[in-house]
Length: 197
Length: 191
Image 1 (cartoon, each protein chain N blue to C red):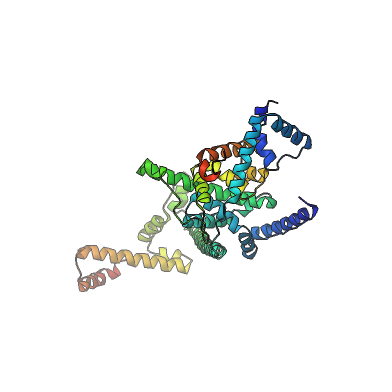
Image 2: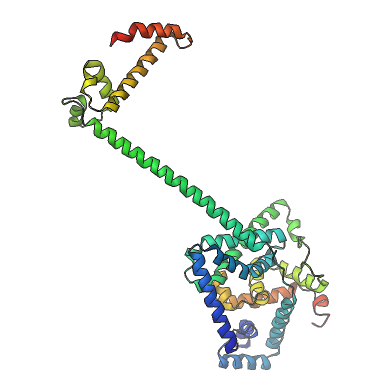
């Protein structure tokens, strides 16, 4: 990371900390700016986990609302991003847990054949390759999927992931490694690698 | 450290999470020396690269509006609840004050009343019954009460009692007001 980039990051962080502090005092406009800053990333994270547009919207909204009313519990305003994603991750896992129980109650085979409920990637015709990768990602257990989405799709650092998922740094490292290996098992080599591997 | 021990460090190296240059060199050397480890590293790299190809899902444009609308709605709702709570606490506080006022008033009962005696005995006396007993046994009881509002209240209770008694005498199913009026007239001067 260059010095200029670091300076820009520090400025953004200071700005964000200021917004978090103002929002903690009840300033809705400040919180509105934070929502604007994170809505795309948070929605993208949740949507990658739940495979349904409407449910992803609901979980994202509820996570932002819950975060606003819990801001006083946030000890370090600089950790707002990790903390927000932790709330979203917990909400998402709760939803998946409930859905899994309901699905298993109905019919185990339904869960096995469960596929993305909405059209993939809005506004873009997704290739069969990216669709296949998404489907393979969906087959991972939630605690492997969330960590790969954070690391490889969202660009979180290990430290941020550790804070967001409330797990030790070493666990982040090993979980990412094994999640990637597991994902490879679900990928059709012919589709993804064109028979190279 | 055996080459296997480097396995999870491969992910750290790939993700730029290794900051110790000595460690980086050590793992790079291990990757070069061990084909199995190199194969693991390539696999990690290819998966990371594949995931990087995925398009992002785009959040709906109205997400921020929706979130802020929900926050405002919930804040307003909680303000209303807080308002009701405040009103209820006020009513509760007034109730306590009223009870205290009545009990303090009871201390003004005529000397030698049953209440005073029962207090001395450590038993609890119903202040209403005290007034009632004193009312029926002492014809001048009303004049001993200094508080005009209390006197009026006693008068009201007395009238209500008499009215209830008239109803009872006339029969519970009667609707004949005339009978009641006559009975009230007959018993009106009895006290």
